[in-house]
Structures are given as structure tokens and as C-alpha cells.
Image: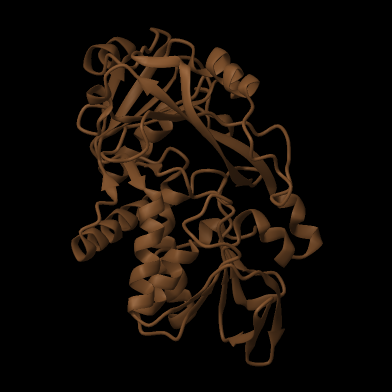
Length: 373
């Protein structure tokens, strides 16, 4: 969100400074791991569709400008149990919800039975008590390179980026904001706070309960035949199971990137501190993921060959929706990016919207669904 805002504000000719505690793209937050899933049929709700559609446009524009491929429309399979509830947490039957959003926006999707999935994509061993939806406008975004490209373009357009610099506080002033960092103090008429899992440091204590920091693990496993998992043959998959412990996400293998197939699950039971969270993944945690989540769901995967694993953080809200709104005590600071693990696909358009808020007073895309209330 921060890199996107910096780029879009610089594109508008603003005097803009981006400050990051680390040196993005980095592995400390919620954005790393090479790829993030994207889809236009966004089952979380129709309020997200304009953001993801515009984000796709921006990534295509960046690819045309730089030659760096960012968006891989391999297709995206949503798989869910054929039972009431559909195994998708707060949202319910995720296949049906995604299909409804697609119908409302006139988006092409294909309903599939479990047998259809197995016949078309034999790597996915979907059992007959599941159904599926294929979104041809889904796939993955090269998230690390998307961040890097936007930062590079922003600086080429005149933005300043101050990395490895911690913001200590943001204080409201008569003309805007005073931003105090370990490297000095800066003033700005507008501030966009996209600090993710460190957000609690910048909001009133009575809002802290809105946000829980959860530890998530991304895994890469060896495969028998890498050609079966390329974007032209392997759609991404989001695959909720009957319980919260069964969720599986799968990503096609991008060319010339980390060997192995990227897969993940989501664990939201425990809350963590972003400064002290354990970023090591012990063998027993990998074994539990294989036995509980992977099992035999993806064919051609070497379950005894986890090539590596990385930890990332989610900043979860109670209903898993975003909060993008002004700071409770400062109308010149926007709070953004507590995105409950499904934010990256919208990030380019959110950055554009925040640049518009900063410079024009409002955004072209309606963000009212993400207000504090």
C-alpha cells in the first residue's frame, strides 16, 4: 500500500516522501513470498471489485513501461465444500458468493464439479463433496517485483524514499502533520499510514481491539514435473475446507523464480507481536501442515521435500474486511492496510485512491465500505 501510494502521488507531481522501517521489498511484513493471489470475482464482497480491476490495469501499465511482468492471469479456482457455509470463515459459501459477485459485475466465470476440476486440472485432487468456480481473470501478482517497480518508478518521478528508518510518532499540527523519525523530523500536509502489523503504535488504545496480528507460514515443496505447474497449465487455487484448519492456497510456479510449488494455509487462533514473532519454521510445523492440510490434495507434489518456508504476518479485523479511513484524532492522516490477508490484489488501486485523497480530498473509487463504522 505504501509503495503504491508513493508511486501514484509522485505520478501526480506531488512532493512526496516514503518512510519505511525496513528496506522494501522485505520479509518482515505481509507482502513477500514472490506471489499473491488475485481475482476479479472477489467473494469477500462487491466493494472490492473496482479496486482489483483498477489494480490489474495499473500493473499492466507498469509492465508496459518497464518490461517487468507483474500480472499472471493463470486463472483462479475457488473450491469449497458442498455443504451449507462453504468453509470460508466469516464469508460463508465462497463459491456461491464469488459467483454472485461475478454475476453482478458481468464477469466471466465457469462453475465446475469436482470431476470437472480433476479432468481439466488433474493436479488438483478435488473430492466429490466439493464444487468449484474458475475465474479466468484470476491468477497471481508478482508481489515482490510489484513493490520494487513502484518504488523505482516513484523515485524516478521525483519521490524521496527513506528506508531503514523507523517512524516514532505522527503529531497533528495546525498545518498538517509532524512526522518524527529516528533520522529526523518531517512535516507534511497529509500522511498515509500503511504500517500493517505495526499500526497499533499509531492509533488510540481504544481501537487496538480491532486488530489482531497473526503468524502465517508459506511453504515451497518440490514437484515431480515442473511443467505441470506453470501459469499456462496451473491455475491458482483457494480451497477452504470444512474447518478453519483445512484452508489451502496454491500458486502456479513463475518462470525463473524459487524452485518448488508455493502453498499455504491460514492460522488465526493466536495473536503475535510483530517485533517478537518467531520467524523460524520447525520440522514439526511442516509435518503438521502436510498431514492436516496438504494430504493428497495436490498430485505430483513431493510431500517429504519442503524446500523452504517463510513466515509472514496478517493484520486481521473482526470481520476480515479492510479499514481505510482517517485517523480518529487526525483528519489529515489516513489509516490503511489492516487487510486480513487478502489485501495485495487491491493495493495498486488503493495507492492511487490514497494519492487522490491526499491531493484532491477524495478518491474516484468509493472507499466508504471500509470506514471505521
